[in-house]
Figure (tube, helix red, strand yellow):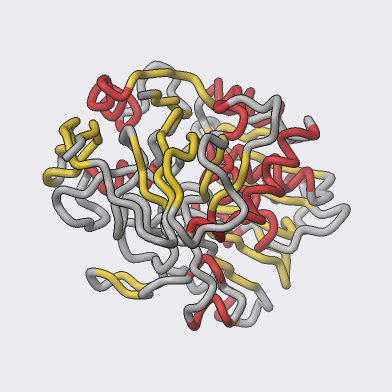
Length: 357
């Protein structure tokens, strides 16, 4: 049986490069030869044992590649096409999908975690940090890459860009809104860009890493607050003349950033939460206004599917957002263990890494 190289979860603290059989293709599937993929913060949660997956699973959920083989029932594609697939794979026929929540299209509960339904790559099925990946329900999930766009231009679309933009969308940002984005990692930077696209006219970014703060400005932030130099809640309330923000976006998954995002909301404002939390959250009574502040708290799992991917690539092709600067490091798949060490420890100005077989 033909083999391929893959980054495999062995145990907490160990993701290693090893060999696995190249997957067989079923009627609804497509086999994609990976040309570029990347590492996500969620993969680091897996590496640290903070999110449970099966031992022996191939990790990764952000594929750019070429169709190697199509299942007999897949329609609208041909072998040899350049494609991406969203990190969230929808089938379209689950209860969640039929209710309009395609991101939750899956079994819904795993290892005691609820709401991870549509996230399959590197979670419930083998993922993309490999030479090949099998895409389920390929007709619904593959999106062809427009001519003229490079792998690195579309690499953020499957997850980081889709998730970041969804933070702005879930916040229902309106023209003229003031928005605060807590944390300017790759998802937070895309949330900043998404807020600008949706019409926010004052965007306040919070971080402490100089390179990320500079990039936040290039992605659309009007003000950047270094949380090590001043209290972001105090600064945001000062910048808004005590009014607070219309929408706050939490993009890190920490108690401190969640609480800060809640404290800066105006009455009736929306907290859009994107972070993946590895512990229980506490909601302070005063920040919550005892439940009487007319606040909305929204959580979002990255939207997927071919139409979502098409729209994101249209944004890239239009030139309105350029995510290429987010790729700060490049490795071969053979170097994936070194890439994990660098990414997990956020050394050398790391934002995102491009991994190419």
